Length: 386
Image 1 (cartoon, helix red, strand yellow):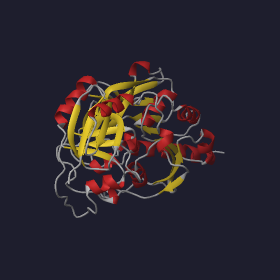
Image 2 (cartoon, rainbow, N blue to C red; image 1 turned 45 degrees about the vertical axis):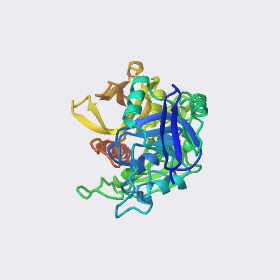
Image 3 (cartoon, rainbow, N blue to C red; image 1 turned 180 degrees about the horizontal axis):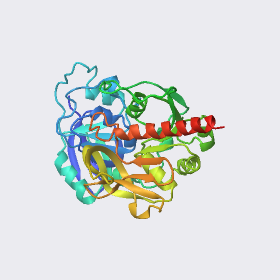
Image 4 (spheres, one colour; image 1 turned 90 degrees about the vertical axis):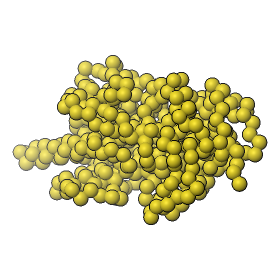
């Protein structure tokens, strides 16, 4: 028997539908994602913490869910909004339906929503607070009030909320490895210290595919603790919320940049690197969420299709003289990548490890590996010359 549900926006708009997840209420910032596939990876991406995700593809849930495709150990979005939930799910890898997955994860979700209309509202008015309320007798006025009480993501530090509680090692490669080329390996495996601001497992898998062993450290780990691990490079991960309140991460990155360690940032890590070098970040109108975003490499002029998930961006106009822009969005011209002119440090706003999604910019991991190998070679040369 279906349970009634509503999605209420802070502007007073009401969408009626059916509950397909846990019972109860939830609030968050409502955003839309245009990816054609990958609902399970989206639902387990920590970058979606405190957000209600609307999927613009109409049929969601038809392949069920599988533990192999989890990007983290739990579901992170505050809620899920879809157009249609198929009656049956079928896939040889599936072991649980989307409804069972949402109920077990205690996530409130709604189907039967006109997601085209909702997406147009979000595009015109910007991402706004919302509330999903379920039950036999839903109070729509109360749902609107709850939506309006949500404080918004601006100023919200969520990296320290979703991060791992303690350091751990990661050596597992991709579930579906590419056999076209052998991983770049030196005589010793490159050791990467990866800050966990909400890190996705597939980032760790790709780093491992490139011959790295990874020590994942909590978001509030100091630069001194990271340097004491004697890594060959430092990775700044993706994550949720506003980057500006993450002063612990910004300060740690600033100190790491004083060393010769290569630094690579993705998503929130890109924003933190930007803030660490003195740039500013801005809250975007409705952000970029999806797997079909065109981005131009400013050095080559080539256009790449990328996966994106962010609501904040580094303001290109505030970049200092020692930092150059490397990539730009062809949707709205926003900054997508930076590189330091005087340090082996660079970052990208999108997700080059996208799974599923385009792997056009996967070579950025290769670039990071080359920087670490170059540093190691310089050290060996210096040691040999003594």
